[in-house]
Image (cartoon, rainbow, N blue to C red; front, side, top):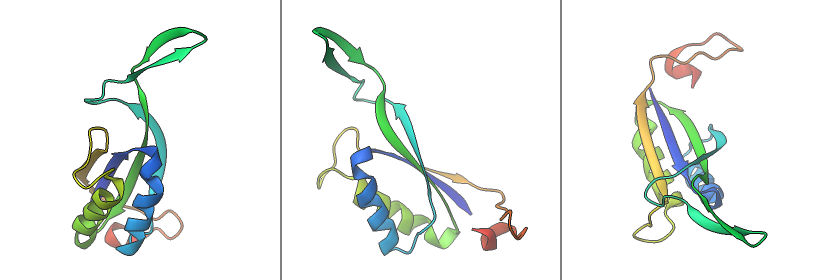
Length: 115
């Protein structure tokens, strides 16, 4: 079992969800978050004063998958999250981490069956 964590642009969320549905990945958690990478923020003007916004709004997806679904999940996220054919700075990141256990609270099932 793996936990796939993706940080993407908020505007690409619907495209990613559609791509995940195509590969039969239906369970995910979505969280609003903030951060920056190479973009290093941007400047905005508010009431005539310019200021730098260091943290940019992002969306974090957490998807627990069995081993067979790891690569299809990654491919779907990349397909949906890229802003162009070659991609652009700020399109996001995907992290894949091992997951020791999963427990379904309702039934007490554990492991791959609980996902």
